Length: 335
Figure (spheres, rainbow, N blue to C red):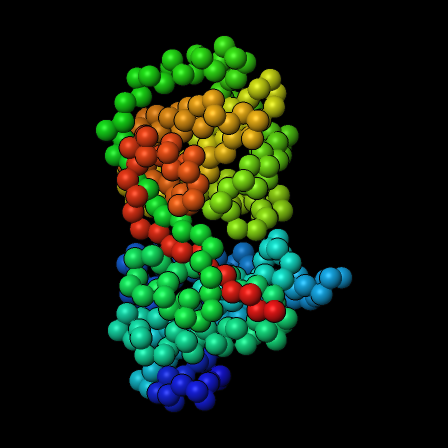
């Protein structure tokens, strides 16, 4: 049991007791965002995370390796009213720790969030982390002011966009495609050139284009981890990965995912190599993926974008996407 003497003894922090606490965490998450968590999903996520910490300092004195901490906040009746976690993935930038924290709506503004955050930061400091990263929802009143009060700085604002595909006119797609094809650009899917060489070239394109994405935090994970995230077997198909080619060079990509919402599909990533931007390649890739989504029975497309990414904002709004809920990415220097 862990506690903080600066907060009322009515609230206690404790370590997780698994698998029993999966139920409590799911209930807490769903009290904040209904339908956002299940016991099964939490268990599945844990199965893919190493259980042994390898946190250490590199040759420059910056935190590296993997490790995490998770705690629950309970009231005197034993009800779980808050959750906090801090972790470091092996591919994170040296010195960085990520974190998440949340409090049941009925117990917000009572010091619970501050108690959880203080505990996480103490753990981060004990491992000599230099930067503390997190996210707060933009639709929860007071979330950003709370974070700023505790020393966090706003790093990015990322939000969802939704498109009713019935409002989209794709009749002009062929003209744009022909124009680009005449300049030597061709469009295929990963299914057309499936194989390890193509997947590796796709990864290299992600690495290149993600560096210019304001919504990207840190480096991409190593190839095996990236593959699990970018091409998940449960939500992706090779024919849903649309690729622009100049000769045999991968110069653009847009990936399509299914979702748990019937009739809703998600654009996970769109990127174009720097020297090929401004020619309509991203628009064609998105339109091709939307066309495929329609053929799969989708009525709605979703994606995410960063508020400061003007080019992507213009493209999405031009296609008819409407902005919705999102989150603020926040960071706090610790050294």
